[in-house]
Amino acid sequence: MPKSKDFPLNRRLKKGEVIDFIETGGAKLHREYTFDFYEKYRNGTEKRDQVYELPNGDFIYVFDPEGQSVPGKGNYWQKESFLRFVSWKKRVDEDYKSGRAASVDHWRHYTKTGNRLIEQGGVMLELISRELGISKDKLDYGYESLGIIDSVLEGYDLDQAWQVLYDALVYYIGQTIAERVEGDWDINTSNYGGDYPYITLPGTNLHYMPINIVRSELDGVKPCNLRKATSDEIRINAFRHPIN
Image (cartoon, rainbow, N blue to C red; front, top):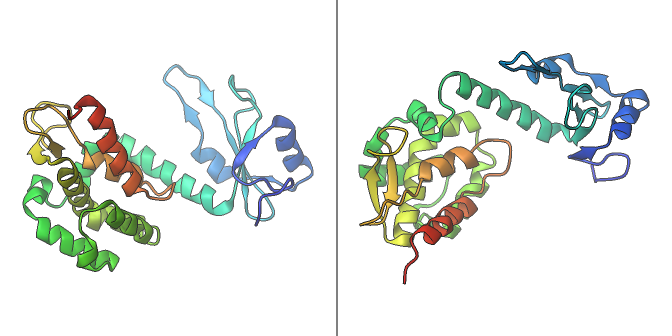
């Protein structure tokens, strides 16, 4: 459905627009999703956002009418986007409750190889090729190959990705960074998170973090962009360690 005045997809709604959708647009309160987004803070205050479903299957997310920041305003969500957002929120909540809010804790929960992934480059490459159906001659640790992986991951089951591909993607992105910056793998012993693999440059304390990239990009709420995230990681660290 194209964006229009009547059905503005995935954008902020004014309070009056929200009221119109509820009073004349057929929006009905979705009690399950409204409950999912309820929050009670330690100081006793409550956040009572509301979710309404429209006759066409899309959703209106309404910010707490009694809230302080944007009371009664809302967001219009296309159905598919909203359901992805709901799934993402449930995963984040579960990760937080289970003590894996940080990327390295999240990786440690799912990893099958731990730090041994550094030594298993051939196995990791074969796994990506087989699971994603990408010829190994295209997996050359270049930015273009990351773009190919991004496109295939869009149609790949997210839970399967965490269970099967986590270590392989961490390795592939790490090795891509290593070859790009002439860096080396190392195991963390000084920063938060315990022992985990990262890329550094000899003689520096730089941490290129492939684990962070995989965790943030493979979140299921937005299109995966490992290519851009990897480029950004390299660019940001370049400011910290400029090469003359």
